[in-house]
Structures are given as C-alpha cells and as structure tokens.
Image (cartoon, rainbow, N blue to C red; front, side):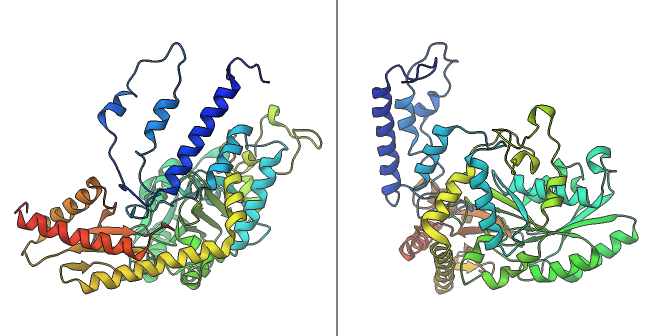
Length: 479
C-alpha cells in the first residue's frame, strides 16, 4: 500500500470514485448520439472555476462529474464544424494506463520509446515513405510543421543551428488554401511570415503549378534562396488536394524541400476513394498529420515523418551531459525522442495510437474514411436538390461549402449575415455544429464530415433545419 504524501488516505474510496467516473465516461460515449451537440457552459459552473487558490484540500470529483456535458461536441455525429475526430471508447483504456505509468517519453530505455518506434514504422509504411525514415509523435500538426520546416532550414543552411539565418535569406511556397500553421512555423522559426510566398489556386482550389514555377524563378532572380514548397493534402476550407506528384517534380528540379501538410487528408491513404490523389505523399521529404482527426484517435496525437533519419536527427540531437546515454541500464536505448524534437518532457501519446491501430486495423479505419467521403457526396446531392441552397465549392473529399440563398432577394453582406445567423442558431439550439468560412469572398456554411458515427439521417436533419431556420428568419424579417 502506497504511503506517499499525496496518495489517497483511503484507497478503497478512491477506487470506488474512479469506477464511478469510468462508468460516467463510458455512459457518455455510449449515449453520444442523443441529446444536444453543443451546450454552452452555464454560469453557475463557470463560477466554480473562479474560486480562490485552494489552501486546504477538498474533493474535486463532484465538479469533474459536472463538466462532462460541456465539451466541444465533436463526439456527437452532428458535429461538422471543424476537422475534429470523434475518438473511440477504447481510447479511455490507453489513457488510464498511461496516466498510471506517468512516464516521460522524452528518452531513456523503457517501454514508451519501444512502442513509439513501432507506431512510427507503421506510419512510414502507411504513407509509402522509406521504411528506414524517421519520425516523432507530437501533439498535433502545428508542432509537427515547425519541426519539419526547421529540419528543412537546417539542411539548406548547414550552420543555421549555431549561426542563425539572415532575415529574408530563405523563402518558401504554399497555396492560398493552406493551413495557418505553415505561416506560424515561418514566424516561430525566425524566417518571417513575409518569406512564405502564397501561391494562387486554380478553380478547384488546388495550388497552381505554373504560378509556383514563376514565383520560384522570380525569387531566384531577386537574390532569394528558395527553401521549401508545402503541398496540402486536404485543405481545411474545402478539402482540396494539391497535385502532390506535380509539386514533387518541381521540388526535385528546383532543389526544394517538399513538405506535405496532411493534417487530416493524409489518412485518406487508408481508404480507396482518395488514395490515388494522395500517392504523391510518398515523395515528400517530410509529412505532418494528425491521429486525432481522421484516424479517430482521442486527442491529442499528431505525427511528423521524414524521408531521412540522419537529417531529422541532426536538427535536434544535442544532449546535455546529464542526459548522456549508455549501453546498459535506464540511460540506454536506441531511440530518445529528445534527439528528434524540441520536447524532453513528453507524455506517452504513442500508447493510445498503438492501441487504436491494433484494435481496429487499417482496413476498418480506411472503410470509415471512405464512408465519410460518400456521406459528403450524399450531402452534395441533397444540396443540389434544394432550390434554396447553393453549392459554393466542389466536394473533392469530405467537406461541403454551401449557403442558404432563398428567393428573398438578399444579396452581399445581408446574405452573409443570414447564413451566419443560421449557423449560430443551429449551434445554440443544439441541433448541429457546422462552421462558416469564406469562398470567393462570400460567407459559406461549412460542413466537415470527419465523424465515424455520422449517418445520412444526420445530414438530412441538418439540411431540413437549415431550410427551416432560414425561412423562419426571413419570415420574421430578421434580415
């Protein structure tokens, strides 16, 4: 029986309370299809988190029980707003195990690095990258992108770790539909956001390769050093997939690092409906993606992969004396995550990823992804069949962008405001959670289908609610 200063005084009571919380958590996931999608946090609960710093201890279990209904709502089948995976109940078990072990997965010779190496090997195989490549399990694609662009920078400017870089020396390229984390990486790494060239897209919202070539040529003529080009595998606005094979060809001919932002779209390689358009990922020097999106692993878990292990390691390996390795004992081990990224203190993220892949297998995950794509096609057809709805972008993957455009003669900002209000009311009434975006400078209702629980009936309910609320707002002359 543990006798630590902060261990439970009554282990039987602690065990009973833990079982109660486990039951409540499982109940929540078992009944996730029912009830509201999103509920705002009530004032009385908010107030409980404005208390003074506790001096003497007291139980927190009652308050923890109260928070369960007030998450983002992404476990619900009608959460469509952002690219959040829905998670699975089995993720609870892996999180319990990792919490009880409380390991630091930054290094040393224990089971966490062994499991992380296994997961990375599987991921390199899934993505068609060299099996002797490298990688790291991280919190998400945002951090993965910073790591990838740093490695690209260090490979281009060999002494950049010690000497830094001259501002404006390096430039990179990405499409106007790329995720903001690319720009953020250029900022964090000191390259400057102005050094990221935004390349126009074609009518399908894919990067225009002719414009890319032209911009590279102009930069070289102006004395800049082109560093990298970032291709997008699943743009967050519309789900577009860049011509990755075409980008790879340009990157090779221009001696550029080729990075792919596959935050959610790269997972499409598991299925059949999008895999052909994603084959160019195998040519990438680096790839960033999330497990907590289309892989359906519980938050948080992302990944960065590299074609070259040596290049990856050279950007981070620099252990202090107190982290010196050895051939034997706990300081041994052939994989220290701190040699491949900026974190020494790291949680055991790889366990839930390993358990998830082991339990479901890639075939079932791929089938689930393909079903989401078919659901997006179903919604596209439903939109086209409704006179009051207008499609605003193609549906190449799992994202639909459209708007309510009734015969009320509303135009411009008034029509934008109407659709904005429709989305807010859908959320506030707990019916569904779509989001909004702008397509060709017009506000669109954006429906992202990344939930393995979503059914056609959920999409029918969404469309019916949009039509009903839209007519209600016009009838009441709100707009």
